[in-house]
Image 1 (cartoon, rainbow, N blue to C red):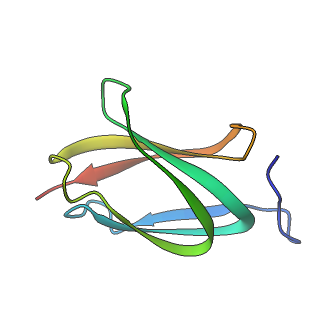
Image 2 (spheres, rainbow, N blue to C red):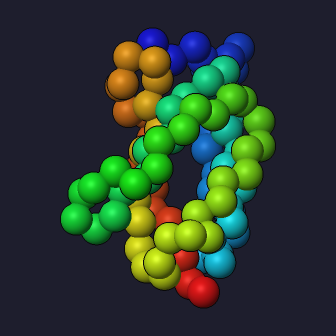
Length: 88
């Protein structure tokens, strides 16, 4: 389950977006999450654990294009989704 911080709200920001493949994900209000990144065919291409605060994610070895991400808790319940654009 999501371990929500004292304020009860979750804030997730991925930037810069679009980028050259180097993204920062800032996550507040939850202690830990699992990031999945999918291509447009729905194939999972990245899966990694994130902790609260700012995390750098490198997708520079992935082709330019549009990708989708989701953040889930340790029971695989998704609590946020978004789009990442890689433009090299």
